[in-house]
Image 1: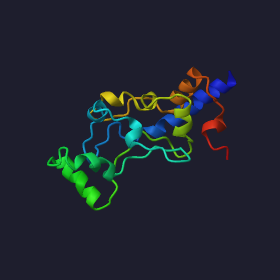
Image 2: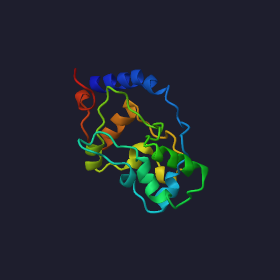
Image 3: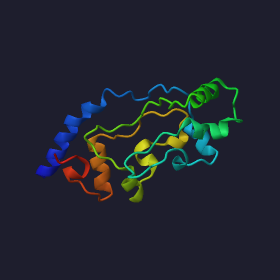
Image 4: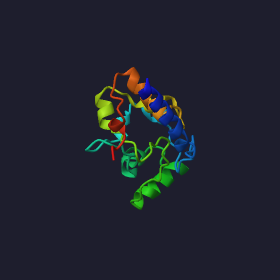
Length: 161
């Protein structure tokens, strides 16, 4: 019982850490996950998880341009994308979900345990514009860990320093 109270208190303390993040940030280029996933793309086709598997990546503009050299190449958004690609610049995507730096969240182990992208990122396949729709606070994560009988010790997600 003491552990549950302690975790609940920590969750309340951590909640304000997420308050400053925009819930639906303006992106540099409009992007519809709904439209792209309907074409048969999968999350892993664009969002790679390089070793050691801690973070998923945003796709390079060259990945997008592999299709958009011919598809919708005259649209203003694709022309902006092409400019990033020509200049070898990363697209400055704005993260919708971000955990605090003191939280260890390895995507690889969550995927290996059977978690689906939509468990944390919401119904991305139904979205033309992403917004934060799931609870990635400590309380949300602890609830998910409880539901899936995953470890709940502090040092499992937090650096024990």
